[in-house]
Image (cartoon, rainbow, N blue to C red; front, side):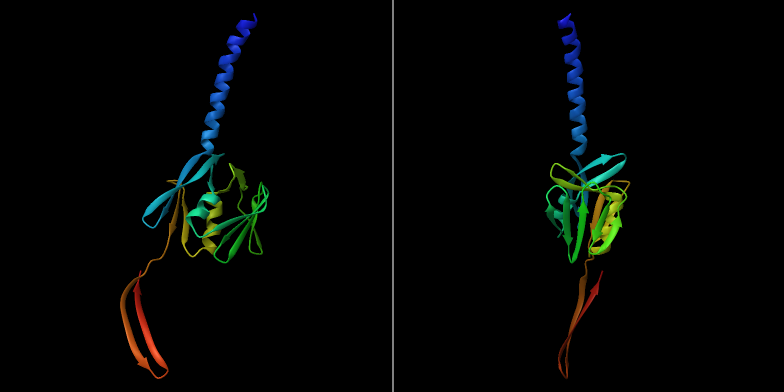
Length: 170
């Protein structure tokens, strides 16, 4: 009798372990970030039809910097002259001295800070010199910079010095 119970229990245990592994794999998905004609990938995961992207990965690709104020609870993300402050498990965050709501909470998985792409990236776009957007169809992030072409340069002597004129096109 005990052997029959064990033979039923072991396959059930194996199925549960496989199912657990599949759930963990969802956390380690990758999202493409298109930058300057190429792309890179950052960690991401889906939760209730919401795509969460790794802000830690995005900081590595941009000029942002993450700082753990209180380890495991409060994180600062600095980009250019602006500071984002996140409290894990909360949908509210600060940009400098203003409080905002990104609808879905920030989370910590495998030592990385994750934010909801669709609702967070518009806030990041407001303070970044680059154009940052979320494409819901391809589920990817796009970072576009304005590049200028120098079409002409002219120098002319003025009473108080030299005037240099640079002509640009986009």
